[in-house]
Length: 192
Length: 98
Image (cartoon, chains in turn cyan, purple):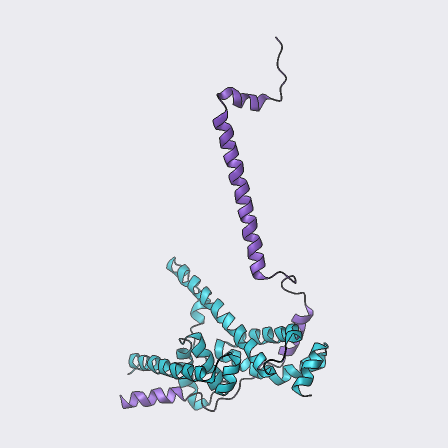
């Protein structure tokens, strides 16, 4: 079944069409969420949230953008929502720690992230890179992950972020520059 | 310095050739279970609406409390002596005819 056909069937409440859409996009959504969130469980939860949102709001999908773009937009939105709420919890945990209340979950979140799709020989360096990516501003982080982890082109990313191709290129340049600085600091501190 | 730059470049290139991660196979059934379950929030009640109503109720209760407190203070000030207070407390009693 082609994508426009799936959308029509989805609006009719066809569960088979929903399953087909799910199978087509499951890994794309999960991989994007995983790259942004750097945590398997959160990425699974977000993936579920995305498909629930698709199921609920497909009737409102007007086809102004492609179906892929729409799905990626929801994925990015849900992932960033979780990141922002996680930052609020971290600030709260920091305040608590000032009064002697240690948050073990907060400490566990600092463990390195190993993306399952990274080549074995690059595993350790990729973990260092992901730590640096976490420090980027959210717009740079999103553009970088969509390009490097999900393999999307700059025009595709521009459509998802509702911006121009040149804006995406600018984000990528700034992201690389910031990552280079972060990695330089890291390797200087960890040089033996 | 040259070595450090190479290490940084290697790190920046460490995601090259990355494969897409795959989600668990049972994720579909979890999604279906959640779709079949009760909605988390009653339909029509959005978060801004909820907080607006909560703030409005708090304000209303606060204003009522303030008004009641101010009215009570006024009553205390306006009474000339403790007899006024006594009248309040014992007003339910009939006057004793001596």
